[in-house]
Length: 396
Ligand code: 8DG
Ligand code: MN
Ligand code: MN
Image (cartoon, rainbow, N blue to C red):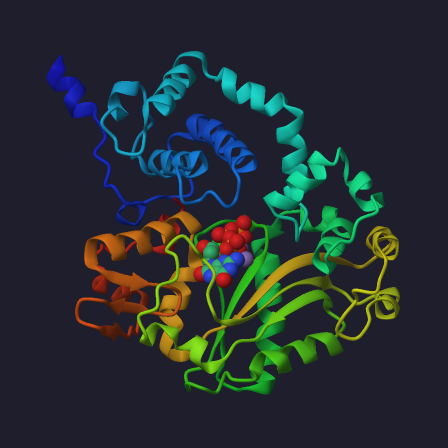
């Protein structure tokens, strides 16, 4: 009997970047519940106590393990030795296996705080701390937030006005549509350029919350100044509703050459990029009137709400455009493919196990004191002494 139990135990590698994690897995009953616990922990935790223990991260690790298992868990004994699944999580798993639901999760789902925080964090431009401020001020609906007399960032104004559009799942076909538009524009400015759909779609998701496009050119340096021209063209075509262009300096683009150390939990990089909202697919005349040159920050929320509710032949979509120099392309590709948990462990593993520093810009061997350049995604995994995990199996 003991032997049998032993055989049924799951062997799980400690870092999720060592595991194969498909989108469709065998433990949805469990992960649906842990997703609620994970979200709720994020809403409760203060964003600046990431140094200490994080319940949110603990739940994310449980989720990553469950999604990677080759079979459904049928007894809690099967996972009792698995790193990352602590006592509390084991109890929850046991309850879910026996009752098909979990009291703690059901209570969260019913709680006002959880539901309001979920609503408010669903607003583009509003993070957990903003959502908490709105909640703590007593606001209960998006209308409250719109009407409340508080200065909003331009991003939040657009997030509020286009809430419905932006919370409609982005389809893969729409991602391809945006990619073609960007590719055609870019090719006319700089022939030979490559535009790649990354993020969730590259991991095999059929829907997403935004469209992440990596833009690169085989000739190093040819990409300098390109994004400004692309944005000008998109503006001329009247496709841009809102955008924020982060420029960067040459030295930042090559920051991996000096062993500076960004925090391993940060996904932020130093590529030149644009975070924005475009109107897909058609251009309407009222939009032309309402959207000022590059900055619509002078528009009132009411103008924007009216615009979003008007009969329009387009929908607002979140788009990220990232300019990646050729020499950093495959590190950028790994980083922007994600998912976030996969990146997190990849970086942690590189640091702890190999004394290397990984980012979306490159890989730096701290022992040898050199930068490892890569000509393929496979090579990145080879340097990291990891099996090549294809994008579809990085859904940790
Ligand atoms: P979704 O849009 O379908 O919901 O999921 P996703 O595509 O996986 O999420 P995302 O928020 O669009 O992020 C895509 C990946 O980009 C994610 O793994 C993190 C990574 N990433 C970087 N650098 C940066 C950065 O500077 N900012 C952001 N927001 N993400 C970055 O490698
Ligand atoms: Mn995305
Ligand atoms: Mn994105």
